[in-house]
Amino acid sequence: MRKTVFRITPFGGFDIPDLESWLVKMASKGLGFSMTAGPFTCFERIQLFFTTQRRKSK
Image: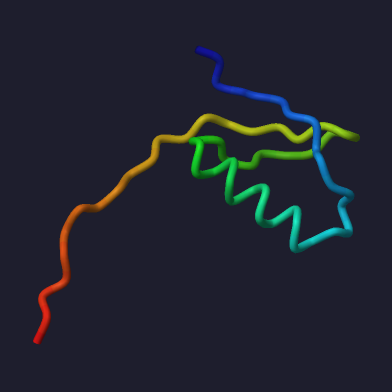
């Protein structure tokens, strides 16, 4: 599997709220932002860690 993944950026660079939510969505799929190159966004595959511990209630 490739370490680097390229995607077409679906929003302009000045549409910060939509761009931020898209990057969060990509991160939840295991893709961490690396850089932009014109209309493309470069991602690196990341390993996701989830905790299953519950907080103790007082």
